[in-house]
Length: 149
Ligand SMILES: [Zn+2]
Image (cartoon, rainbow, N blue to C red; front, side, top):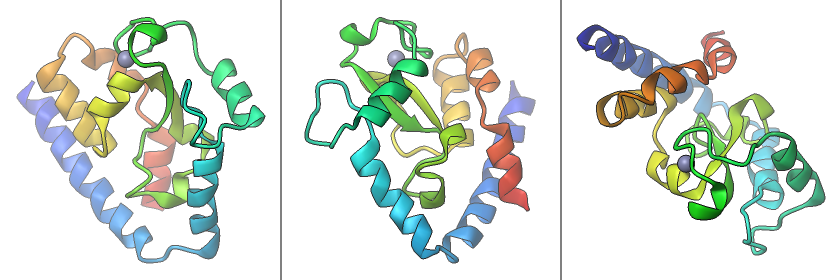
């Protein structure tokens, strides 16, 4: 466990360093994508956020009846939300990158908050060790690798 924890800390530090470097070179398109997500995202029963048919279809095609993290029915956990695995606040250029999106319940989304992915893995490892193996399988490996180049 210590080893894995150490590995996560190092990965987090690395990703954070790379993220900060890219953050300073944000383009106009990055900001457009960041804003686009506000009109695109789907939050169950929340019409103020500008749900579109496109986002609704995407959510339906990319979710099951239960949240992949807590395995509870969405209806019991505040509904479906689209989460950015790599937080939008830190990685605005990944706002509309579909590899970065997944559907989780509102409750799990709230708990994940603005944690960086590796920070989140570490959090899950410490607080929900039984769920950690699953979280590891949904790590956005391609995106994290792409950040390095
Ligand atoms: Zn959940």
